[in-house]
Length: 117
Image (cartoon, rainbow, N blue to C red; front, side, top):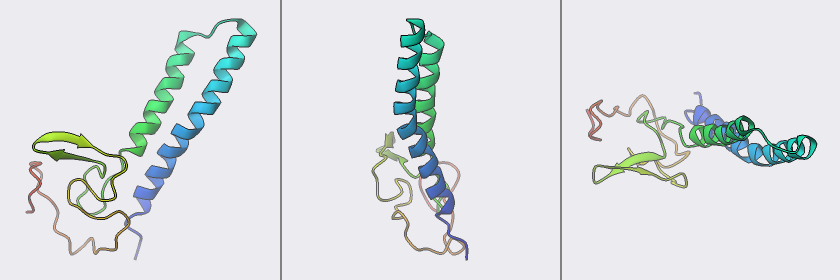
């Protein structure tokens, strides 16, 4: 049986790698550019910040293999809630990397109220 967490782990690794590597690489490139030309183009700075933003979005966006919703995003009292350090899905409560049978787990309904079908 395939690992249902494989895509989740891959998305976390890619996003984390982008975020961690963008900071020192961008700092070195922007510093070198500034030393050589005397100023840093605003477009280069925006590109660096956009790379960090994409990495963060990718890292916080993996889907729960059981309910199919964003693992780190949920609702508390009807308000959106986000926690990248959560050890369980903020929608269905599945513990991170827990063993489960995806076929035997009924999906959530599509209206977003968190109830089972």
